[in-house]
Amino acid sequence: MATLKLGVLGSGSGSNMQSIVDAIEKGELDAEIKIVLADVKDAYILERAAKHNIPHQWIDCSPWKTRLDTTGEETAIRLLKEAGCDTVVLAGFMRIVKPRLLEAFPMRVLNIHPALLPAFPGVHSWTQALDYGCKVAGVTVHFVDAGTDSGPIIVQKCVPVLEDDTPETLHARIQVQEHLAFPEALKLLSEGRLRVEGRRVHIS
Image 1 (cartoon, rainbow, N blue to C red):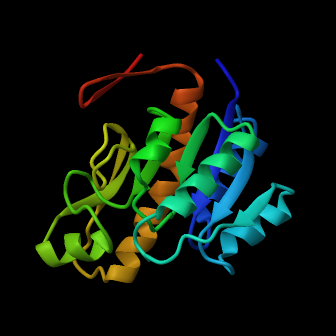
Image 2: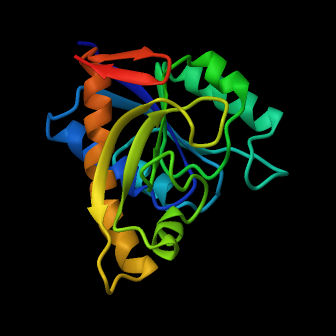
């Protein structure tokens, strides 16, 4: 086992980061968050980091809203390396990362997606699931590769779709499972129990 040294990238409220912080503080996850980076100046994830005395910083990722530009990517890599991170967590980071970041942290970048991948990649996946008439939705934690929500799957959790669900109610129930899935996946990684062969992640 090895203590994970986490760098967190986020864009919004940071509820998934909070679930990781909570697991660490309860002694359920052997990890330390070394730095939190956000691409939105007033993202609440930065305030959460401040409350827990975690170093945090806004990084300018302009001009694209959905993709890291080269300058933003290099800034992120530099700050993560300087902070001593060995693993990168995308916690509601609303940008597609570029190959340089993946090369800097090979098979150590993890993302969470509110769907049972490979179904419904991209944004508003819970609405996609509802519109499609799915009986089950869910959440996936996966290693990040060069595609969009396409990397090897570590953990998945199912959420039933109820007859009277709205996008908001379904999303709320999915988030409950997100907050369980991300610490679970990181715990498996910290314990050295993950082995990747092609698309398969084997758990020992």
